Length: 443
Image (cartoon, rainbow, N blue to C red; front, side, top):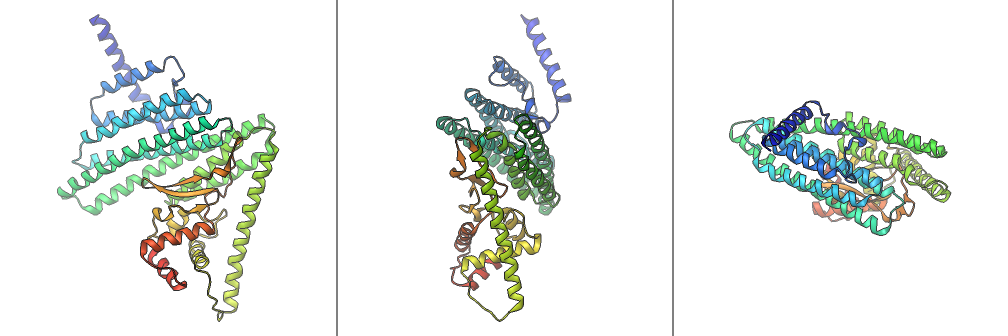
């Protein structure tokens, strides 16, 4: 019996060392690399081997790294099982993900907090959570475009998404708390505070850039898969969606180069929705195609009217500077904010998004957009992050109707933004001068 146990331990160590040396980074794996999935009879055995591997990993940081890697694999399993409508298997993977994330959260108290290497490890953990949150957003998108779900199934999956978000948010808060402790220790040891801040920003930007470029590569694969799907189903008239998705990815790539990471995230998610939406719409449903075309046409006309309005107003101002017509405060605020974006970034093609305003106005905060309505939904500030929630009227039994203008803020949204800023700065809205004071606060 001892010989058998010794052999199993030896075999485990060999496999473990080999896996550490040869396994690719979990961020670089494709969705098809999820391994043994929860619908397999061997899934329990696969999880058992992971637990044994963790038991023989004695370094606390390495153990947390492994747990995060395994948690990422569980997310890929969730994604695959959602696509195959295997909801029992989805729940199995989500439960395992939750336990792994809880372990990571508890392990944060055991990890060192004395030197700059500990700070770097902490930032690597945060970057991994950032990437996992992007995975959850993708799972949410794929659920939204699925047209073959009952109301009960959709409710179950919506709860699952909220659970996955909560899991990651809990460990993110613990990581941030641990980082604060490390910063205090480093300052006590005489490390310059500005040096600490620069190191954090540099590491975070490097991680975000890497994660976003990987997400772009993934969306490009989704575009390729959708192109093949359209060819197989003789639906090449929808390839325009994929062309728009490619253009949006180009914009996202440009945003990354300019370190506009929030803007890039938003664009990548928008491209993903366009890429997968063509696979969520059943063949032969002409009515939905026409609705989508009409929606896109209306958005283009609206944006054209807005551009012409701005151009006409600029021309009118230059021709007759003596006209001093008092504008409606909301319209005046919208015009000032949008003109500032146009002056610094140029006229956007698909409307004005929160990330554009955040890039231009340094004192504007994500929480200012809480409750702001936009084309296709609304923004909500939850757990320190600004999230875009698709409106219920965009859903049907055939899936989700998607537009490349989703997320652009319209007149109602700008009115809500002004209201939020009025409350934050304590400025009562009473004429253009009050709006000027609020905008000045943002610069």
